[in-house]
Length: 399
Image (cartoon, rainbow, N blue to C red):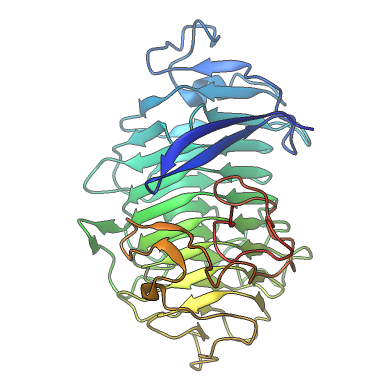
């Protein structure tokens, strides 16, 4: 049995659990090998008693299978990016993790088409950070991934302003464009909170014609990609989640899984471009706020495996095919469609992100999910899935 450390912290005004696993699928060791603290120095040996000053410096000293533990505080990179370039090996990931989920802020103040965090190594895990940009002019990317075999888990990415242009950008972005497919694969984006992407002062900042400026943008057709348990809201210009690349010449042989995400109050819900993708157990509510886009979108001819989603109140309807005919606007037979304002679904529904999105007792999302397409084995809080015979819908599993 792998050892775990459980730490309590506040998320959405309620206590949840931060779980730091050891010797898991990414090969972490039982304790950290390198340490970082805000009062450290990069001239130090990065030990527990003599820590380094910046997370990427210690990370790039680590070897395969080692872990960098980052202490609570703010790590300001000014006019540059935090660049994580070291690679691990199969079964021995290099991990950088905040000691307390969400308590380690990585920020910069760059403007233009720039980024806050660059993940440039393979077989790596980036876990538990708060990522933001502090410039009012904004930048293009929160977390940018250029390699395969990358885990992005339990982070908060917020207040990212893009240029609202065609090349795209957003909260968590995997390298690619609408016309090029880099085939990146084995990327896990799990249990992240993403909000206020092109959304400042309570208002959208991208226009209605913006196509690709998203909460999560995974524009690749590589194998074994997984987007699970994420909560995305207040994303203007594009979509809460965009996955796939229909310029790839064919779908991946091992398709992407998009499961148990909660997406609301964005310009669009979830858009998928590759056939074979599993899209199940998601909550997609009240999207299309500036663009009239729908909850679920796919291009003409794409065969998507939808199952057991909760879709309601999206301005463009439940399902659509944006680039040709209106498409299927009905709710599929294995879905549910529940108005969150009825008060039956969440502990406290608030469309602006200030609520508590755990299931209320008796919620229609409990035991309403599907087990197809290998849904996640845990929820946003780290609790095991399923708690009963069937999976729940959304980012949280009933306790």
